Length: 223
Image (tube, rainbow, N blue to C red; front, side):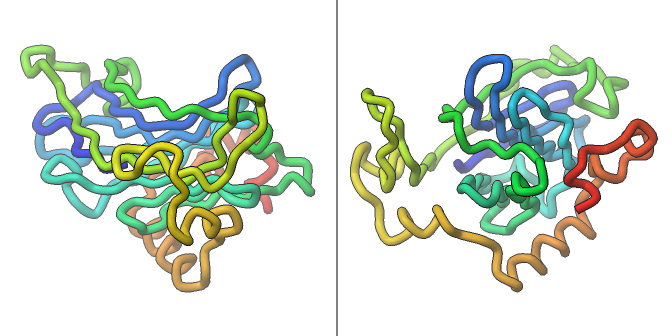
């Protein structure tokens, strides 16, 4: 999906673009963009829920102004990886570690959701900065949605290789990429690019949060 975020004073707002199943043990893959006061950077907030359990937040600043133009935000979700990408630059890789007892989203179909909502109790500087409603209405723009996916049919069976969205005719098979994503991983070059982003632009990692460490972080943090 291509997004252009709320310009100007967007403090307190959250622009969301995410995948989610339903129910108390839902799976979820989140892109959330936390607004800020004019001149201060957006925070890109990512999270992964497995069987209803989240708290796997990683947050980033971006290397561009996301309000000036459209940028592409992508999720690669296959049986081995959940990879978050910004303009095709990988920023996070949540790996399937089921063999080591870590739950991984793979058994529940997910739908795509997007929203723009008021979260001024936590979104901007820990909730210290509230939404200034004199700047309303707040608008974010979406375009260029495309998904190559396994789509659940009426009979409950998945049909893979479907290309859907505003850039593809519904129900048509896509190009060679329709099959590639299912087994795709990051090669060495893209792993290095991801580490560069994480070294220079990551501002929060649940695995290194001192408060979390004291309470015990999720098991995948030590792997």
